[in-house]
Length: 344
Image 1 (cartoon, rainbow, N blue to C red):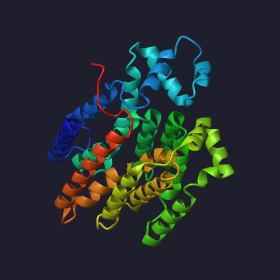
Image 2 (spheres, rainbow, N blue to C red):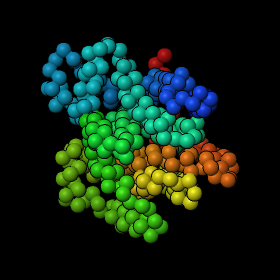
Image 3 (tube, rainbow, N blue to C red):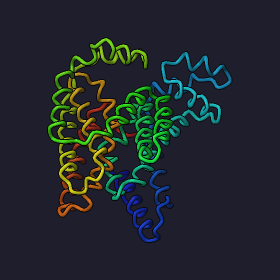
């Protein structure tokens, strides 16, 4: 929680600095906040289920050998393998890959919050307490991908080309990003209403267990990565944490939807699509991996909605208590996140 306190203070200083000097650009407090978040993530040692697998694969890479042959050999997306090879070529440090992946996962998220959030300190706290910060400890490549797609979406009104280019870069790191980007591109046109939300949730609930048995869906997933079918076919029933996530994010979505300051219905649409994926994940846990792409929009929609609410202080306090409990459940449920240890 010291990390959360430190990040909150630095984000608060950044907000005061920007207000005092009317400076929309980054300041020293922003740099310090990002440095703190990246350092804590990058300096972890054997924390997260992905850590050892990525460390071993990284150690085996040899930038002096044929890069293309090595990219074909490892069962990881091409962009990530080339990124790892480039990192190996620049430094012999065995920890360098975690600095690079942490920076790519965190900086785009913070940059988006810095640009679009009206309450940066609260948004940064939610980033930590809703566990979007620690999620990449267990899904390293996808963590980079959902950070980049989130950042790319911030350009979509001004430049759809920018969104597409950034999404393609993200897809080179984790192929799910291309499907998510397509859903976002279409989903942004949806103006959520109660009836359409009920239809979405009911429809996803009805097909939750069967969607992965549809031949075209299986063929699409296999074309992206053969291991996705292995994940689906070997998956066990979801635990209670998914139901807790579903309840929490549904409550947060209701807060956003009922606020007079809900000026971005497309953000709410993304959150509701994320909740629909949580419904699917109750029967097919693999869908849980895609939730983060959409759930991140809570970090923008909720702080902006509550800022001008007449009961905003009370509601923010309640949200912080609820998300702190959620954080405790999450980090103690998902494997190898605690205890935290560093290589220093």
